Length: 220
Image 1: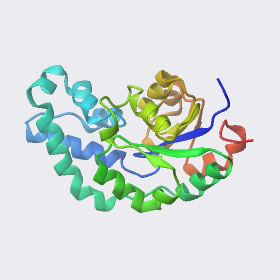
Image 2: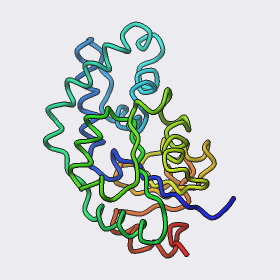
Image 3: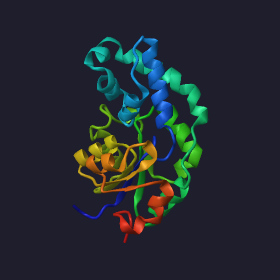
């Protein structure tokens, strides 16, 4: 593989602190249909797109009977939580540093366009990256590789490094043929992240930035 020219950053749970908000919104969505999925199990699936999550936590029968309704309810439940979401410390500095090392920075999200736009506003993301994705860019979300591939294609990249927070990020990155580094901001363990394909795991955004020289994001 050629030297990486593109840095793909996951957004939810990696750059902005959303994973537990998502879990609560999904819990409330399922309860509207008198289905109780424990929040811990929902958390384990966060990082998947909604097209994958319902089957993963509740089975194909639930997906077939009310999957679209659950996703619509999730959107309604998540909307009021948006005001509570904050970016992680050091996000602007990390993205600026990686771009300064010669990488094209692209943000990979399968969120709705309005949600992604709101996240970008939280940390001035438009000026820190070359492009970003939304759910409109793919037919299948993580752990399928489509989102990673779409992100790289948006900037004409040839080889990428992926930064994410969930096991699904690294399953997708591996299927797309790109290495990745994990930040523990999504609530997954070091062992889980490594087993899913992360080359290394960092405790926080500033921790990754401090150790860039020891990663494939060190640049030339």
